[in-house]
Length: 572
Picture 1: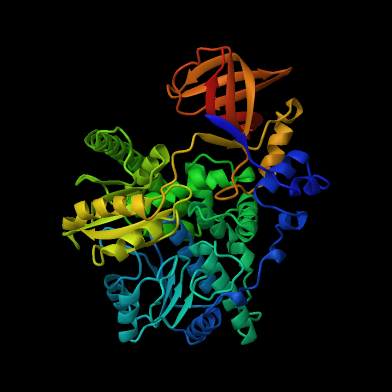
Picture 2 (picture 1 turned 90 degrees about the vertical axis):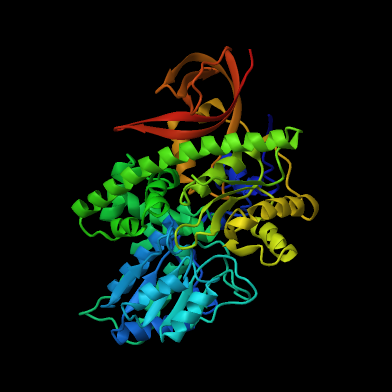
């Protein structure tokens, strides 16, 4: 493995005049050019006006609120959709809407998006308006049916849009053609937050608020924005960093009951909550509901206004997450065995350009996690399929994950253009996508996508480079600097948490919990605790070269500096 320091470019020297020199090179390597870009005050958020369609969207929603019409928020079955749905319901209620409900499709019965099936379910309650969250841009048939039934539809979404959009009454999506909004990276929860913020302004302009109906503070909903944004792994551009930083701050001060209950079951400390606590603590538990049963459990947890009820929902989610882990482990073992068979059939021992796997025992809600694991470990795009379920017995639904440098939706679209009709439907992002095939077409699809990847799109070769932010001095291997790094966040997708490199002497090592290597490392006169997760053997050497993250390790009321080892090489 080659350690390579990120190039901070010419802006590090300028930044170092105002901030710690290590932070200066970290930020510069992530594209920050001046200290003004580090100002994450809420006042720096762009106004909603530049979002195409937002004016018509809020006029329709405001009309429904004022006329006391029935509004249904139709969410998606992941943590982004769940947090956005909760935000929509809470914000509408806070603005005086009296008839607000939510509906979220069960992935096993309805699949993704505003399908005709979910519209029929929604229509049973005779809503006047449907507001989608985190989907709808590709839901042509569902939108058409809703309009035929006399139901107005406002789509709020962030997924890549095709050339033709559905015939909704209004569509708000920063990634639709012609939208000039400053960020293309908002999560679905970020889009609905902007829509609700514009709605408040629209209602204020109609003199809707007063002593009997106070105007809500939209910043009160930023905890939900942070949860959805982190969970959906959207790039943390400046706008998302502002939203996440303020959302985390509000969680640390006074979390709503559902968030507090989720932090408790995840054993996370609320007072210094960070992005990792959401990504690895709350998100898997919320997502477990949508992966295995019904995301309404996750939404109800976030909507709970009393801690007792919130804890009951959180315990349900915790149980589902434990079950999800067991299913995932079994599926990963099966997938790796199948991949070994594929490599043997190829004869060369090399990975195929694109991994495509299906097993009748795979769970539809977990295939995305398995695809992520395969893509990460093989450095190849991976698509894992499962049966679509009783509603579509002849179909398979796949979840795809990509590798850096390969736009996944572009790859799938090339297959669609080469073999029209082979793919029933698809959509997603550069790094993640979903698609549906007829079961009988799986073999042909697997062949064609490898052909396309081999001839029309270059699949990046596996990388043996470990990128770092250089080395740290002895005086920086301490709790104070770990806190400085933490407070300089939020860190996340496309704004990676700082990683460093260095050589250390091993003073002590032991395996803990039969799964992780705990070490006491020394450099110069400094001793520091370190852990290598997933390594259950001692290192047969007295010195190591490591790539690591410097973090604050919390145990009860105690905090210490700790190195999280991501790469380790024995030296002697």
